[in-house]
Image 1 (tube, rainbow, N blue to C red):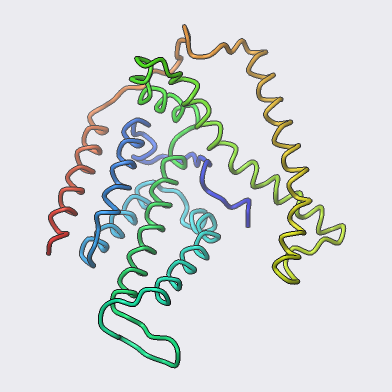
Image 2: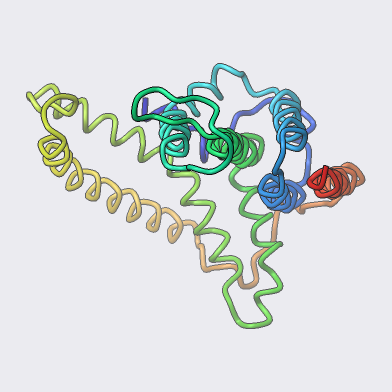
Length: 266
């Protein structure tokens, strides 16, 4: 299950989202996250769902790949959904059975939170799924460039963020391998009391940290051997170019946000 994490992975296909400038995708997804939190009724939530489905379709990333990636997160969404049903006690009573009482506001909040979680995860994941790591680094560096005026290392910040995103799937795969190796030696991660399961996970941390430090050292040595000295004085083989389609995508997100804000008061 861990190797199916989609955050940080890149899928090479030919789509309009792949051809967008990484800066437009980063700014647009930032706006979309804010827009998602502005949705507060069934009309706005329906538009958010339809928009997310449209973006997933335009990305041309296989649906099976996306489903495998969000499947582990669905348990968190389900847990949050049930938690709201039990803890929120506002609005009219819709259903009563024994000690459980379902309130109208509880159902509304549970559905809203579930939609927000799923759509945010999908839209943010599409950024890495449709953007090469090197382009993502260049886009982040360009967006962070105003920070240079206050002497903050924009290039180094962008590089650290892109490396962190890139190595999420790698560490998930490494965790899966270590778990399988320990299960082959008799370690049980799935049965017993919760305390025993947590105790069984502790031996997982030592080899995982050792592997992470080794990978970090190998990466640092590889960068030094290739003459990496930070962003000062570096030139770029591929220069990012903001095109008309990027402006259209950005204006479309702003227009979509305005529509959501207007529909909040219906």
